[in-house]
Length: 284
Image 1 (cartoon, rainbow, N blue to C red):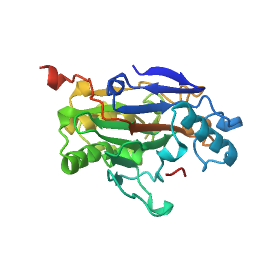
Image 2: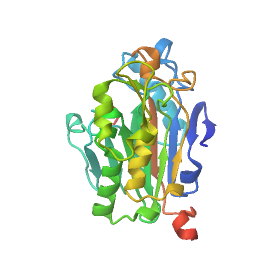
Image 3: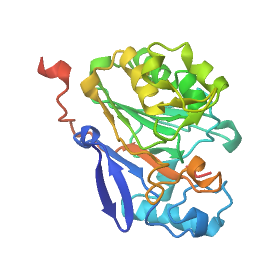
Image 4: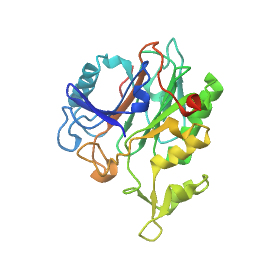
């Protein structure tokens, strides 16, 4: 189970698995602790949902202050519900224009850069190589999950950084749960081709409706990519069931804010995690 923390007055969740990595700062933020009002109350981190811009700016400032960071350290991309991956080099410039940042995953070994994913039901996935100190954040909505985005990121980390599956740790954050995510036939068909789809796709109570477990679909992808089961942690919070704590697009009827989930490499300290293998600037 993820742990709940609070910093001036930001409330957030952390993965115990990732918290044991001294070189990481990470947080799956809740909707609590911000300046926004009404449907966006209170820590809305998106300028695109209809909230007042000055309140969103206040929220980013509150987040940065709480974690003793600069606002410029946070990088947000244009999430487009695909499977494109933005790879950030360790040094030098990494973007030229805002319009070019149309991605749903970010991978980097750069320090002091907080890579972000905004969510309001979709699955935020954090991936860490504890040995090579490479990190990735993934925005896994149903389209990205159907395209296998989480597994695709792990394959890229293996190919480009030489990461080994047994060194990879994964935290799957709060999202809409199987209890609330009813999908149509078209969406269901997009997942049927995946292995063991019966473990995360169930017949619904209504005709031609299905209940989809997005966190489990991503967990299965990650397992098939070779990551040991003990290296994967799932938050277990449904954003739709817990709208006092999280924004939920489906639960709100479509008018709501977005919470942010971020991860950053902050130092060169070693990671103390023992895995099963070892034991046997830009805001948009």
